[in-house]
Length: 233
Image (cartoon, rainbow, N blue to C red; front, side, top):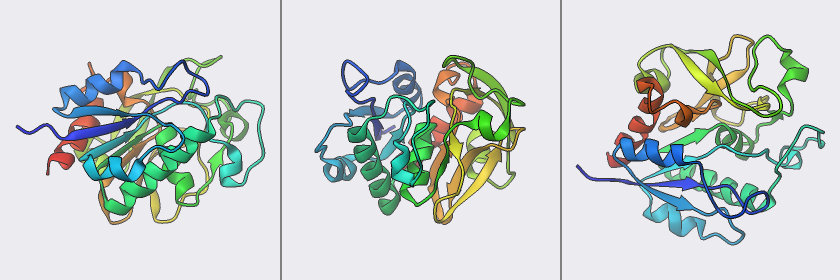
């Protein structure tokens, strides 16, 4: 079996000691049979050169996107802004979509893709959707809630069902969809939890954090497995 090279974006140095990444992402790619390669989200990163060598890409979670990038005002709950990371991940997302490179976008990563394609974000979910579903616990802790997936979504083939239990850790989500995107999964309060790009089966994007439960949940590991299979195809 070949081991396709899967690039993973990283946290930036604006709010970290270095260009690092939670271990769970790497472990999930290794279990799927991929070869993880960390891509530091630095100013001047050689994005095009990276994309030419990769067989797949994961845009990981993390801090918020600068709301100015989608024409919105600052908000008191926004944290860990990093202009270098925004610039690098926007370029990665554009390049991957243009090349139809197998792409798994997780939490912030899903938001990056939506913004790159002209969409906007809800800056703070409780102000819009209330507290019916907790998408994270205060101050910034994970929680769990179910997600319902459209029956014909690519996610169903990856995860094996139309209702999954997720680990959630976000306070923002897709508002206006970017060009060519469609929602395919929702939380019970109506928050969009997954999107797809029309005509691009190599793109998977989820608002939750599959890496945090993938070691013990075959449905969540299935997202990484599908990415690696697509990358190896």
